[in-house]
Length: 159
Image 1 (tube, helix red, strand yellow):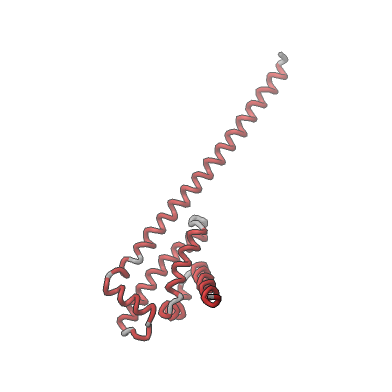
Image 2: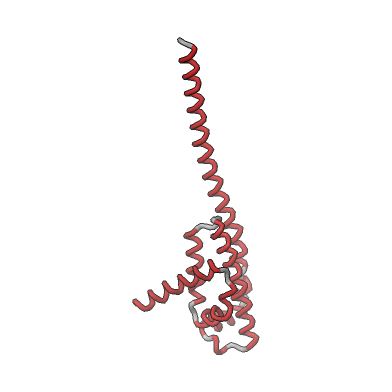
């Protein structure tokens, strides 16, 4: 065998090795990105869920329900409590929106969370709060919630 042919075969094998290594590296990067996205979602989901904890205190839950469906019946202190609870909950959604914008929060999950929040923002008390304080939400959170409210309103008008 000629040394030129042996050198060419060696270079071909080396090139194949590089290609296999690049493919393996791409697979590893994809897996790492998926794991990072999952970890980021979990890191945001924990405070998101914790933001609801005060609402589950029975006295607060009564005010929450009353405020959502009959905001005109609230006392001044109940209205303050509701606004505080709503601000706490929506601030956690702002964190979700920030992670979504960075590409570290799953798009389908973001849409699902926005739809959930739109459910109570769409109630009379939620609309009242949103009209007064919705501008405090980050633009992406506000836009996502408003899109979901529009969808809900369109579905309700068809039904």
